[in-house]
Length: 296
Image (cartoon, rainbow, N blue to C red; front, side):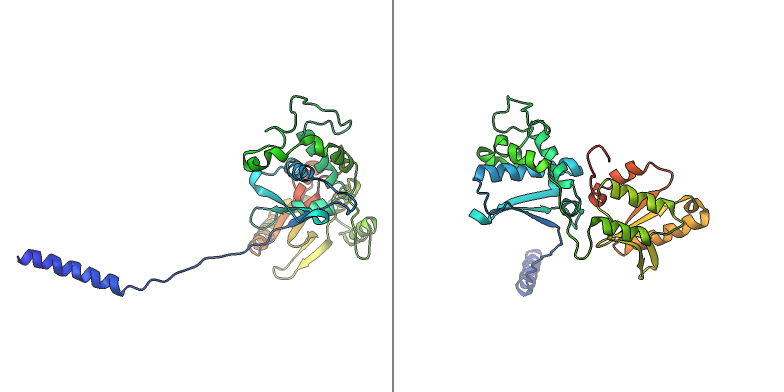
């Protein structure tokens, strides 16, 4: 009986503890910053939903091919109605990769995306010839995917062929408040280090291939402190390392400064004198852009 009584007392204690325990409801939320792009047509161009849906996924595929993105790094949806119909594209990864910024800052990035989209849709980007007649409207090698199954009946690669052909021959007109592309290049060149041949070579190459030019040259970063050879807003520092940066003491200082920059949230890109310039630039398409086809 004593043993049984002890068990009842123990359960009674647990019950009283549970009765007096307070429950706190915690609601977690967060927010993030992503680059977005709103793509629309002139008011005079009225298109049906088949066109808009097909264009949405064709552009997505083209962007992913040109900038070598994974399936989950870019998303899009159609918004608005009638004359206000638009395609909203956003970078789905945390932070921003700068890809969408290239589409509006680079002279020919959009045309390169259209060329890639035509190839994805089985069309020759030069002639418009159908390279896969067996694909009647769309297939899993072009516009269809498991993530857009609910829209499969709307997708038709033929509906966007002519528009993509037109887009493939277009160039983005980059607008500056007080200067055009050429004037901006000349100003940057004047600001480069006169003793750095590599800085001028990189800048000339970006200009000649009509890539995105830096927003500033010899930008002073006071919080480190240090000076970036070139700077892209909001946080990209580009350093041009000539032969002097191979010296042990210079290499050590570079490592310390660039580590501190990364810790402060800056992105660091290093262009070296002893590596092929074209290959280095092509490795950062999200920053420099894609350039003219055949030139980089």
